[in-house]
Length: 240
Image (cartoon, rainbow, N blue to C red; front, side):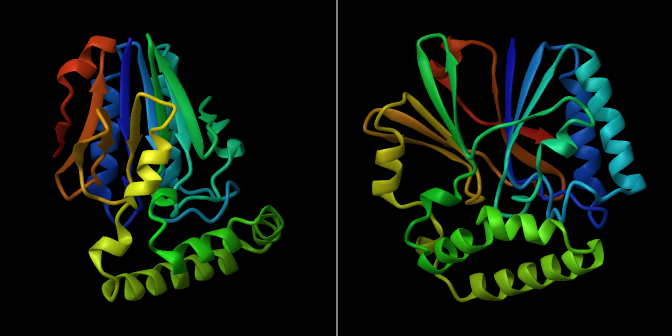
């Protein structure tokens, strides 16, 4: 069994190299009895499970081929694609996970999350997240026309980019106390979001930060068995 963890791909039609890298990853691991975990921000923006395009159709075809080999696909939402639901994942047999999920690997309990919930010092973002992720508001937004949702998503993204330019790196990074609390009853924490790939040891436990996908490479995590955690390291996935 191979456990493959990725995050922050930010896929969109505007960046075809990233999409090619993801499709190549599926091919690379399709015969490895793989459990693929996508820990949020799979897409640069997601305006609803009812959207369709040739770009998405190609990806869904590849995901179905990956599943046909007996592999599994798990996804939990990020701050860019929080509107993605099980309806889209049903197109290729994927499974939607809770925002905070757990994986038991041998004697280890692993906590999986996107990572934005750990950035508690970013008060303005946490306030916005609480509002925009309200189930009632989210349901109302999904009922609006696709064009309206696209314009809204574009506006949110531009606003976020402008705001982040004036925020300090420390504010947008994880809060140490939040990390310690997240690790309190588990053995390993895996997340993305911060775009700062690394492996930290917190009170004797690993906090593994996955990397965002760049123009030609990404920092991902590949685990074949429990013993791998004794010599764990991030893998650089390089694509054309």
